[in-house]
Structures are given as C-alpha cells and as structure tokens.
Length: 196
Image (tube, rainbow, N blue to C red; front, top):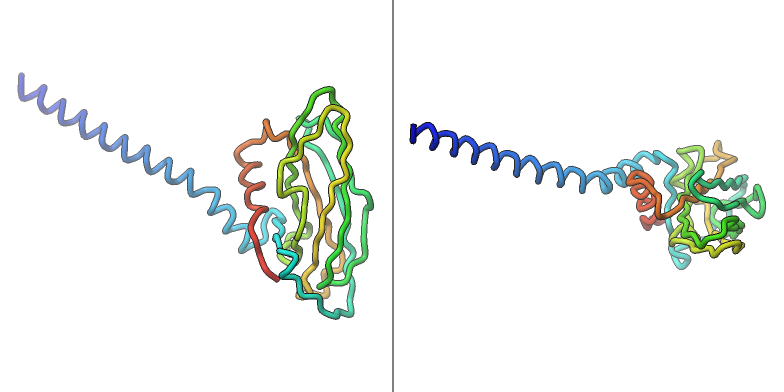
C-alpha cells in the first residue's frame, strides 16, 4: 500500500514537471510570435508594412518617372473620430522627400487616445515606401471635440519598379485602450527602421 502511494506521488511529480515545461514552452512560443510576424512581414511585404527612414539617410536622385501616391484614412468602429487625408493623391518623383497631412477630429465628449496603423497597397510596393516622420510613430491624444492636423513625411525609393505607377498609403486609427493583441503586433512592426 505504501509503495502504491509512493508510485502515485512519483507519477504526480512527473506530470507536474511535464506541465511546467509545457507552460514555459507555450509562453516562449507566444513571446516569439511578434518578432516572427515582423520578420515575415519584412521579408514578404505582407500586410503592407512600410519602412521607417531617418531624414538624414535620404539620398535624393534624379529619376525620370513619377508615381501617384493615393491617401486613405479610416477609423475603427470603436473610435468616435473623423479622420481623412488633406489631399487624396499626389504625384511624386521617387528618391525625393514629400510631406502631406491627415486631419483627425475627436467627435465624442471625452478625451481619447488613438493609434494609427499604416499599410501600403499593392503589397509589393510597401518595401519601396518609407516614412521619415509620421503621427503613427506615437499615440495621439485628442481631447473632446479637438481637431488636429497630422503630418507625414515620406519617400518612395528610386528602386521602385517602373510597372508600379500607383500606390496607396492607408491608415486605420484604433482606440488605443481597445486594441487587440494582433493589432498591437501589427502596430509594433511599423516602427522598424529600414534604409533605401
């Protein structure tokens, strides 16, 4: 009888050890998801992730063709803001810096912090588009009824293929307090620094 209890205790300890190891493996896997997502997006250009470029790293070159950049802005249904681009398109020369603005307004009666997640379409164009300054780099607090102009400085790489003549820069604003883990992972990947 005593040996049966000893065998049960040993079996219970073994199950406990295995459970602890499995828990640590699961935690490690979850922690690795965000960096893996970033790496896959950087390699494939999936989800339209754009690069971030320091202004001092911009090299302006003479390019003969131009690209139309279209601008789009939306808000998630959880965020009572209006949000739109100041202009809906711009003809740009690859290799040169440009600036545009978006206009956001909090149409609620409470202060709300929002965060914008950018994307570029078509997906293959996203690796040729970088921002040097953007409101999407930080959270944006708008007080009740406040309206704010939000600038974006960007460059289209001179390496962009000539068959890509139109691309769209889109932002979706989310209520920061209600962002899901997937939205936050997508948001974090927009802060990678790349060079063109």
